[in-house]
Length: 352
Image (cartoon, rainbow, N blue to C red):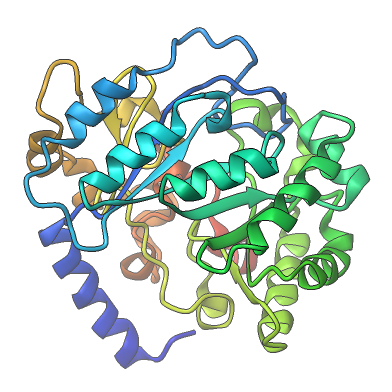
C-alpha cells in the first residue's frame, strides 16, 4: 500500500485532473470486424459486423473540433481488428499532420513485414499486441488454430523497431495462470520490454465462459506473480488499470489506481457515439459526433464519469477504501448498476 501521505497527495492530484479533464487519450473504434472469434471478447466482434466501418473523413472531422490538443495527445486505433481496414496508413498520416500521435491495439494476426513498415512510415508510435498464453492456450482463447504463430511473428517485428512504444497484454484466466512464468520467459527472450496483465470482467462473450474467471485465491496468485517479477527488472511487468487492489497497490503498479475514463480518456465508437473506454456500458454514451460537436461533448458532458458519487451504493457505500477506489474501474458498472460486476479488493479482503 502507498503511504498515507502519498495517498492524500494522489487524491488531490486526481481531483485536479478531474476538474481539468484534459483529453489526452482517444480510442477510435474504427471497425467491429474481426477475423477471430475470441472467447473473452467484450465487444462481441465478428467477421461480418452489423455496423459498417466509420468513414475516416468522419473521424477526422470530429477530431478537428479539438482546437488545442494536449501536448501528449494520442489516438489509439482499436476494434474489432484495426488491420482489417486498408486505410490505416492514410488515417495515421492525417493524424500526424495534426501534430497528434497515434498507436494501435491489435491481435497481431495480420501484422506482417509489409504492414509493419507501412504503419511505421505513417507515423505509428505505439503498438499493443495480445499474448494470452503459450501456443495451446493462446489458440484456445483466440478460438483459432495457428493464431499463436501469427502473434509470434508480430512480436518479432514490433521489437525490431526501437522507436516503437510496444507492449504486450495478457488476459489471465484459469487455463493460462499456471504458465505465467513460461510466458514471462518467452516474452523476455523475444526482447519485449513491457507486459501488462489483466483479468476478465463478465461482459460480452466472457460471461458465458466460467473458465475465464479467476477464483479469489487465483487472483491473489496472479498478483503475487506480478510482485515477484517486478523485482527482477528485466521487463516492466504490471497489473492493468482495471481495478483497485488494496494492499497490493504499490507492489503491482507504479502509481495509485486511477480510472481515467471520461477524465483523460475518451472514445469515438463505431456508430459515432462518444464515450470513454470502448468496453464501458453503452448506457453511459454522452453524445454522437453525427449530431453534436465532439469536443463540446467532451467539455460539457461526462458528468457520471467526473462525479462518481452515484456509485457509492451497496458494499461501496461503507467501504473504507472508497476514496482510493471510487467504485473500481468504470467498465465494471453494467446492468442495473447496483454494484460493480467485480470488486478486486473484495477478492483479496472480503467486504463486510
